[in-house]
Image (cartoon, rainbow, N blue to C red):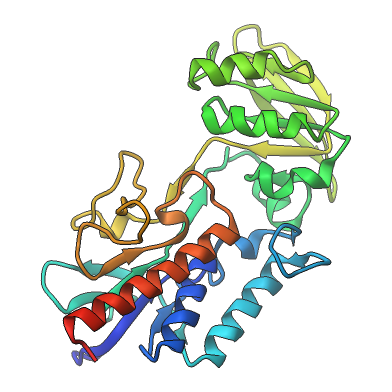
Length: 316
């Protein structure tokens, strides 16, 4: 353990499409960025199997391979990419201080936060295993719905996102079984009305998943009615879990303004946070789109915003 503090120009925290794209742009601008990858190098895409909707990969690409490509490109541009995790920050004074792995501190003139968000899971057996193996469980209908065109699928959730995803799936899939654990939805009235007016969405009120039936791929759900205890067997090809995401923003809470669910607030049209010199990009500040391509775009914006900030302040 060392007490020596390393000084850097730009520190990027997180390594999904946003972090790596920020690193590519910052390195090309000769800002010598240092990027710490966090617990899950490559972010959510490393637990995604096939990605078909990212421009430039005409045949589609496996999520982990795509993130390796991003990382390789950032390294080739000169970014200093390191294994390690930000464990604490102090943004009260400039230069900003970030603790890595609870053992060393780094001082940076600008910070780019790209720590992403994590899907919330139901916590039932086989669920996360099938999600990471491409076995038909997913937390993103827009990402994976097209793989189940013409098939029967289920979705769990009761908010606006769940309703939006159910409607999206209804346009691709033959039947959408929507499971809601209470007798009412949390979604806005207009979204509820749209779901209930869609003929191939079947809503199950007061219903929870009792069991996932699967071998390598999901085959069916056994669902249970909360009041009667009655069980129903539903054959499906995919299960979409839409109970929300949790932004990975806890360590920034003392300093950075967030909404009530922990998404970092940025000045509209920029990646600027409430602290001058600290920028946020990707899913940690985006609860609307949550796509690899939008995360990469905001990573580019963060690097350009950081470059302008450093230039205006005369940091070289």
